[in-house]
Length: 365
Image 1 (cartoon, one colour):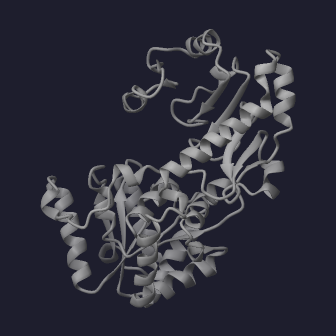
Image 2 (tube, one colour; image 1 turned 120 degrees about the vertical axis):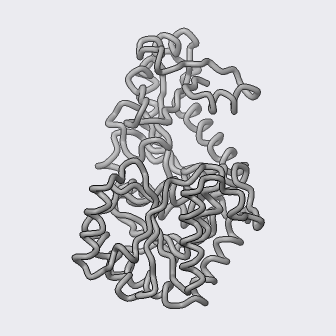
Image 3 (cartoon, rainbow, N blue to C red; image 1 turned 180 degrees about the vertical axis):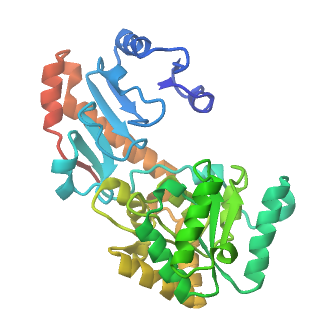
């Protein structure tokens, strides 16, 4: 396994032979030559077109696949895209993907180790928070909850928020006058962008200074427990929450998403279906707004949703947080790639590519 980060190296050091490739000191040619020298059969690109991508350096390998890092086609740089049948339905793949597709049909392609990284605890106390700015923010949320306020949240990046979603959130907040919108301050949220968001909400009849709470970015150690204080999570659109939705669901908070046609707008749907929470998937803005209002208006219904998530996240039949099941399914996927590519019978890349072409829409049950 080739890794770039200390964390990844530490995780695999005792389980496999690891070749350490550091992007800061290794060129694409270095990576290309290392893959060639080691006669690598299959390479899985976990970056895609994101920071640190090395797609062009992987061309020496008979078969390459893209997975997790970039939720779309790599434009033909790889042979296969590993995804699932909810995030990437077969009917949309022919004109959106250049790669063959390896589809998981009974779980989300998103892998989550939250069950190991963030064991469920009911003993969280604000006293464990050391940063005063975080304690102040949590104190404010707790006080609002004591006042009977409904805590809506969106913990995603500000650049995902479009005018249409601001309008939808304003509709929800007007119908739920006791609601507060809770956000976190990512690096993408500067003073100007925050003023613009508040101005847009004010133009839609929302007193944003009073009803929008922006907290500092939470420490990784405590962020799940802190997010548990929210009552209902509202997704962005068309680029929906991915890893942020995993965090929210593991914290036990219902997450309403608006499902689109392309993979970036369907990942949250994939997560919810894997958790048996399809009732939180909406198909249009009106349904999205109506569902949020219905849940926000009914403590009984909202608590039932929260309880279903909390119980379901630890059940083996719900695969989202079942890492053992995910590992088995991913291994079967890699085995299917190996079998279809048949590179052990040939060193001819053209022949391998022809075999991979036959893999279109391979389904892993």
